[in-house]
Image (cartoon, rainbow over the protein chains, first blue to last red):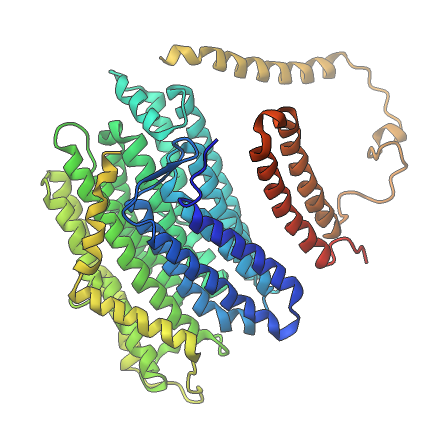
Length: 490
Length: 119
């Protein structure tokens, strides 16, 4: 039995860190407990170094279950970077609200271990374990505001729907296994392409597997948990669910769709395309009505999931499919990186405003420019970028999707592009509404100056700079994301 | 292809038929002589202490359940390992030590947080 320990070093480091955090939580008392945060941060940095060292290598371990290639490394860096940002915005928030700090950081790290496993999984069982390792700690973290009934409600909703989705997915997986006789993704692809006529039962089970991921990425019609859960959860957890957990869902979806189910891409492609149209339209239209900023961000993240689903709608089989599919994967990866940068930023500002005051409706952001110019600037940049304004990375993210559509123009592709453009315009309406409130409206009297603290300010500044720099030089990421396209051939 | 799943469908049908059949037959054939003891809730032969429907369980029971799970999972993995541990050799021993070590951390944590103190 040979295990390539270098390949799983980032996961090992995070696991050891999680256990250390648990031990530190036992050892530390009172206010000292908050120092588990930098401990977790150190572990994350170590894991990032271990991951960067894996760039460019191709490692296979645990049989063929676990593959570390550039695609996986890019996703792992995305997750670890998000983890670092979330740790920074959690520190004061978690310490002040008297959460069980050690448990929070332990659960957060555990959830991210699952995410690290996701893009490397090449086996249905491994994928399922990764998905559950992401979900189960998240169920608990959502309910961490123990005295708050609203938090309990959101945790229960998240848990029940999550378990239902997991059950459906397992059912689908079991039937896929019954058909292919293997849980290995490449083996499944071979078994499917060996079949000449299409098998309705197989297609049904493929859909069931996709439903499981549809829940994770909160695609319409599996999005009902998202707004309630985001607004009931502690805010750093909401940021983690909206960004990291969603990116993990997409990583799993890419792996399972483009490797295992690639031979039936002409079936799930259009289906996910229709889902993309529904998701962005419904998400944006409901977001227009929101008065609570977190709920607005939740529906906006539903809509963003719709944009990211568009490239999946382009997938196809037959001659020339490899080019189209590779471009689709590239667009997904680039959009996810851009989305992580801008959305974590938006949540960071929301946390800074909510701290101590508990204010979170959009009207409470009136006059933010006077109370804290830095936060106002940050919010503006992040929201404009989410909308896709020029000079921000959001524009290039949308452009990457259009580029993927343009690789081989079809009628369906043009329809998708049309929906993308129309929806971007709708989205601007509600993003700009918040920006107007921040800059133009008079601040209500008696509100204190905001003191976001060093960590939060640093995160906001770094992400703001990142949004703008990538908006001018998207090549900084695309140079890396373009080489990962080989995964489609896998 | 689909026809290969026919036995599964048959099994489904058989399971439903068995469940429904047992209920129907016992309601038709079974004698009905109710008395208070028979109608009372079954608590392993004891006389029921309280009305079960509105009783709320202390959260401490769940703590015990968690402890049980830790050891249960441990045993589930140790049994198959013990069967083949000669073939696995030092590698298997190392893996099992790692596994028990991680479980041990969870156990120590639960004790440290007062999981075994009832009051």
